[in-house]
Amino acid sequence: MSTRQNNVIISEPNEDILTIACVNFRTDWGNKAKNFKRIKGFIRAAAKRGADIILFPEAALTGFDVEPEGKMHRMNAETIPGPSTVEIAKLTREYNIYVILGMPEKDKINPCILYNSAAIIGPTGVIGSYAKMHPPFDENRVYKKGEKPMLFDTVWGLIGVGICYDAYMFPELPRYYAARGARLFLHPTAFPKEGCWKDWYLNQIRARCLENMMFIATANLVGKEIINTYPGYSFIIGPGQEDHLYKIHAGPADEDSEEIIIATIDLAEADKVRNRWPLFTVGNIPDTPQWRPKQYMKMLKIIEEKTNFFKYE
Image (tube, rainbow, N blue to C red; front, side, top):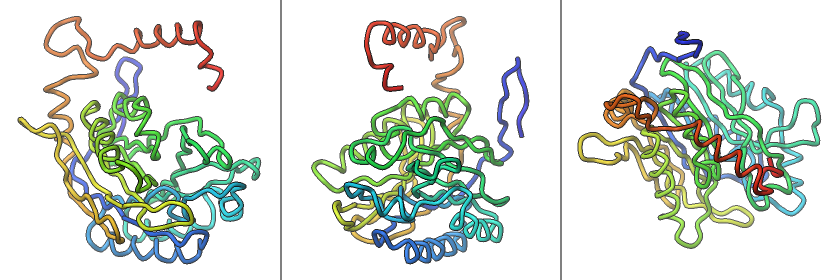
């Protein structure tokens, strides 16, 4: 599945066509047992409709809203692997699928440390987790920042995972995945229904799709929790062909109710656009690179020397 070229490991996908399901999911805040039962029901339903990958929203297992001391999340957090992910692995093996589930993760070494994570479970069992690198606002009362991106290898090549704010405000993570060769970015989110939410939610994901020429699947919560109301609107987007900048392949889902949206996509469409508008190669003009990481590293070095931003790590 991987080869080495010039001492660089390149993932070579064996397949291009896959079916993705995104779940508009309504949590019963703090009722993990009830949420988990419904999650398993949605997994079975989506798998029977032919889904290869099933994406649930951020914190779907427990509910997202953070009360001041984060007691609910601390009480319900699990290690990954842990009871819930091991149970889901029985379904992913049975149906030969992948499930990405948002949940609070307990650190294996220090159980007092929690992460806002997405568990990745596949046909062979629990693959691992991605811990949100950019938890904003009240999340920092409960969650520690994640330290690493997450790419998992499949027959469709590498697939990247990021959570909510990671993609809305920090384009570095999807760009990293695209530079590594990923053609698909999975994005569980808990985006609240407030202000001009629709423009912000759609436009930021469109931007990540366009600038990286990659497919993005985003699954959002729906309904009222203890603080916020969530508008669903899950969707699957990909790079457009010919004169179209992008194409929405499924959704946006309903704003008020639970729903499974599902689409069969051809990841080779991302390759075609990348070949036409190359970001990571020299393109048609010799010695004229499009993406310039060495220059960006120089710029970051100046930021490190001239500002105090690097203290935040």
